[in-house]
Image (tube, rainbow, N blue to C red; front, side, top):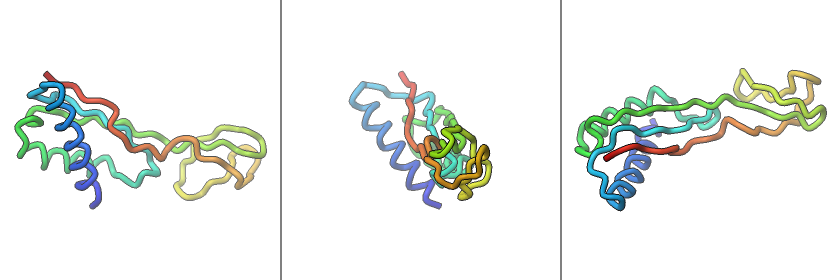
Length: 115
C-alpha cells in the first residue's frame, strides 16, 4: 500500500506550504491521479482520512481526486485515442503498436484551499 506513503508526502508538502503562508486550517486538497500512476484513488482517500484525524490542520479537510484516463497518440496515423485496457497499447484506428502515452501517468497535488 504505497498510497499511505504518497499521501504522507502530499500532506507534508501542504503542511509546509500552509505554515509558510500562515494558513491554520486546510479545507480542501485536490490531487490529479492518472490511471497509469498505480495509485488507487480509494486507497489514497483512505490514507487521507487516517492521517487527517491525527493532524489538526486537516481535521475538516476533504480530499478531491481527479482521475485522468490513459490517452495515447499513434505515431503512424496520428490518431488520439483513450486506452481502456491497461498495458495494451494498440491504436484503435490503424492497429499500430507504435504509440505515445500523452496522458495517464499524472500524480500530483493540484492545489489546496485553507484559511
